[in-house]
Length: 520
Ligand SMILES: [Zn+2]
Image (cartoon, rainbow, N blue to C red; front, side, top):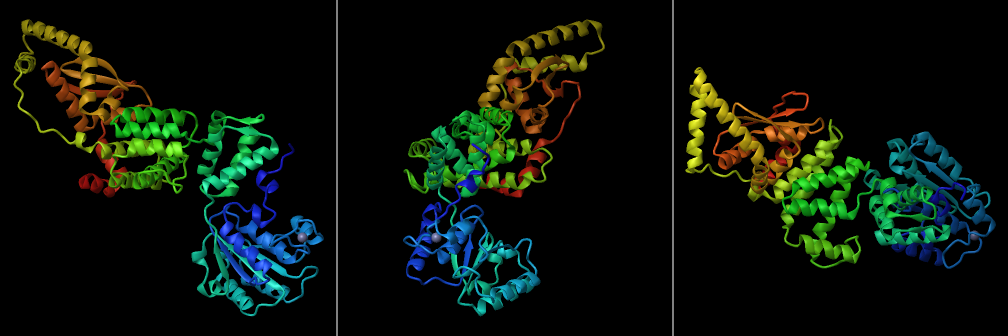
């Protein structure tokens, strides 16, 4: 297949081919059939929803020599010329680069002459919000004195920037985001036409990623088609497009709900290793949370939720117990994370911290600090003795030997019991466990336990050293061994870093999150 962008090749040629805007195209067709169309239109909506295509079809329709039920024939001389962009009486203007008052004055003069060939001169002004104030005033004058043979079609992605005086002179149509199901149908049609097969889920993923913009969907489809050899598999599409699989998002959220942030972070790591960008994951998580929220609100499948019925059922079953307030706060956290991405020195950390914050939100009760209880186990009394020996008798040789022996025993204790200690940490605080297991128990000396981290795990190390977490670990070790050790963490090159990560997390999340935790 020679290279021709799909969205050009499959550009709609009549109203029926415009995807997902049938409410608008039906009205326009009716106006044409009844010969009662306006002389100024404003098409607004996000990019890629068919505004310019509809404008061109409307221009073609008012000039076509052989209309079919309100649609242009695409076969007459005029339709053909318009399709080839060689028709003199359809004039497209990009307001982004022709936004001055002189451009519009010139247009005004030009519009006074009769059409050269067609019935109507049609001016399509794209991104009309870019016009200067002077240019808008000049345009207003033109609209106020409409000529019988002239039609204006203004297109904009930002209708709120259009002066009211202009709006009041136009028939306005708001183009919606194209629904998933409509996009998928169109893509299926195209793939069938070019004889390429595709895993069902690929089209759904492309549609989600395009967020209602048909043109974007076709560009993405183009990308995966160009890398396919007759069949597009989900696996190859995921790689090409950086799409996050539903199951991965599901795994992240269920891990968080079940207080297994460690597992969520592992899934995240795998996604990032596949080359999926942090912002893409953020956005897809946000979309996923939207779907969970809607599934929760409806409690049953609904076409507003842009997912297959099977997936909606999975979401409903899995998250039915979650409070709407919690979901809303989760969305807030994601939005905050996305908002801060632009200035983030380490976007990945932003994402990880957001997930941790969400986990704290979901599992807040278990993260409440426990009140210190009096310790009465005999082993602990023994431990206190040990410590006294170490602290007070360090000058005597005889005692030194005892101390060494005690330390050796201690070391044995810790290395042997490390896995049990980790398990206890996991029971008490899963997040701390997640940070702790990434390090290696390096040495035990002078009642100090040192955990060593590889380069790249600074974040985990810093979290272990964060005072609350450090206290938790030390307390568990005390309970388990009966001995009061301090915990230290180092990087592999022996660089000791001790930073207050709570402050870091607080700074990252901002005041809103502190409030969220307090509400909870
Ligand atoms: Zn025609």
